[in-house]
Picture 1 (cartoon, rainbow, N blue to C red):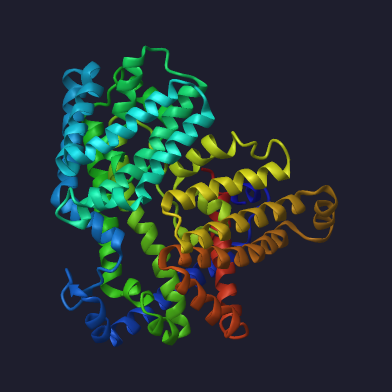
Picture 2 (cartoon, helix red, strand yellow; picture 1 turned 60 degrees about the horizontal axis):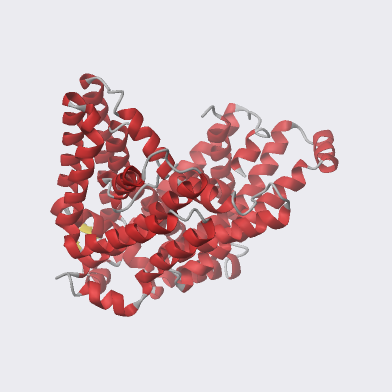
Length: 501
């Protein structure tokens, strides 16, 4: 919906835009302050129930309840940060001294780095999956490739296999690292398989297998992404062996981007020191007694922390990939200027979005064969995302909400673009008023988008309580001002959309 509205966005008077910016920023800060107050008032109870840690900042506790942030932070300290730095150093040295061997050198190093963390049994699982995917791909039958790769992905959920793999490791965190690796590599195997079915590399099987091996174990993207297609990886890596950046430009880029990632990390840590949003949303009692402004602050803090977290998790690997000559997906766009489901999917995880479009949406017909195919293609894409994330109950609700939201937005855009309604609107509304009407509609879309994100980040109980308190109990007291502020957010987002990319 964001790109469809771009042509409909017209400038507004600067004083009006200034008011939207002030109200948007002010509502963020005030709601965060109220959540901070609530966190400090109930710090003792939260400490007792969730074991808040001693903070990095004096006088503050640290909320460790976000599993993903705590998990990757610990692994970064243990080994991942150092192996990533080693990858970057080796890449730079091979680029300077022997660029033709860069891909081979990095592939060997990346495989050794994966083996040192996952162990040979864990890497053996990935090699087995790689062998099956490669063998089935040689048949060049997309349906067979899909069946084989979905079966490989489904092994993650087979309990006897889980028990065996857990026995390989001394800690649960090591097992989870294998789990994440298998899931992310599953997307790579599907990408290679379908690309090979459609347009195989003009090389022998041995060279094709090498490129799949290199693509699978590419260290910056190995554990958590972002996602890049096999076709893009192979083409860009081959091109990078023929070109090289100057030493000074690479050093300057590295320092600037590393500094940005460090700032994002500091911001994420600061957020979980001053607002205990992850512990609070884990307890329904706290959710029920949150004051209205603190409830809004909780919703904003959860989605904003998710955004900042992925700036860190994607930021450093993307920097290394750029230095290697790859073109990684753009980093997530700020969620506070997301005013539609469609925009969220396009701009938060661009790599996953492109993957879904290329391998699911377009092959199933997409928008080329009419509304029914569009509905089906979109539904299958969201169904796959739900399955890939684990297929739990709350993920099904989240996927259904996003599917319904995208379809509703597409229907509204099609309706507004119809010649009859379009001429009626143009005759009776100025361009500025049209934009205000669009922002009004986007406020409702944003409310549902936030609700779906709360289900994804906190579970069904968080979404249920938020819905009850805002739209059922607070339909006349909480919902109207909330929608007014979301209208301001939408206007800021529309202004951002209207700027050149």
